[in-house]
Image 1 (cartoon, rainbow, N blue to C red):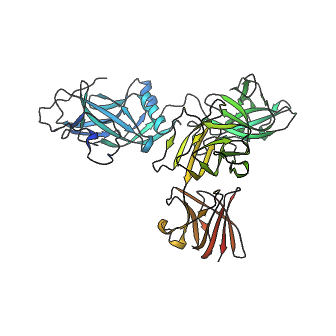
Image 2 (image 1 turned 90 degrees about the horizontal axis):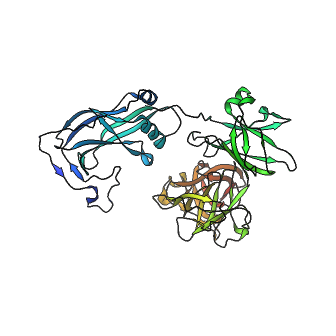
Image 3 (image 1 turned 180 degrees about the vertical axis):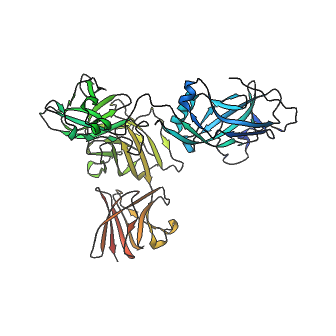
Length: 490
């Protein structure tokens, strides 16, 4: 591939001020690295390729793929070389990649472009339309000048990209199959849960998990089946295991024997179908996020419906540890400092990694100083945490025209387990708003309406709640799951 040089004798306007010279209190964020300066009136016209880019065909032909074409370049500085960067994707997932210019074509290695799609969108093979834009530079030695002024981009549009076929097929669903009387009981197959949620591609998250109850003093044998084997009733396509010394983990393969469960009780079986591996761990009905000197009686539980994600509200002060028992016995999960945490722009949400390593002493940090109620989400398979500070709660709905500014505030108890308000005007629908914005809220479903008292089961990001218009006392009880909201007619 040739790197070409465009030369023009026309005069140029040279802008030597880089991006960091903005005279603003908060300079706009830069999507591209700031160049040394700008050629303000250098003229470049280019357009993104409108054809579908078949990366498999390009790779087989040993060719780069053309992502854009240049139709015009005027006022380009003498003795400089044109360089173009490509920004692929949108939002926070967008990334920047270098390109190679071949004659009038802007090209990219198909291997790099395939990896780019995996980085910014998904690892699942397919054909995707992805936003793209380009930034152009004039380079000479170590000097890099932007073309067209600050923030100028070219060829904005979408690329249609057909990615490589997967080196390893990962199916949408996997099952745990008990082995009974020496034979896999496909009719008793139990579907496993994707540990990142059913809406996530298995290529982006190839982990699946399932909780099962294993009887004491019994030999429990099992295998792992892909959806295709269950559908076809094909026992030959099932995965057996090559276990570790303690039997708590191992490799998966169709040539291995059945897997023997090494422990009894409530257990969680997790498989990684990209790595062909499995693990067995004890499963916990609830977890407790314990902060400081919290007494066991005051610990607020985190609940689960899949033994993967544990979630709920709990009061925290500065830092906390996750325990499998309220009295701090059992397994403890602490802060994995090797993973940089992420904090939201409003400073109310933080996410990061946890670990069960007994040598770790650091507690998990929270974003707000002092005692505060948080909504906590723990993924015990991926060992991640997410906390959202709930500094205020208020009643909002048709009774105040859904106006955040006039929503009626709720007052928390000292332990944050109950929140109350009196004489609240309720319309035909309402919700509980948090922090005076629409990032966090609670809604739910009505479960009782007798003698002037309406009771609702509420959950995070639940539905609008119906009501009979009137004035009510409002009480939220976070001490048990499901959380309960009560309206008492005045």
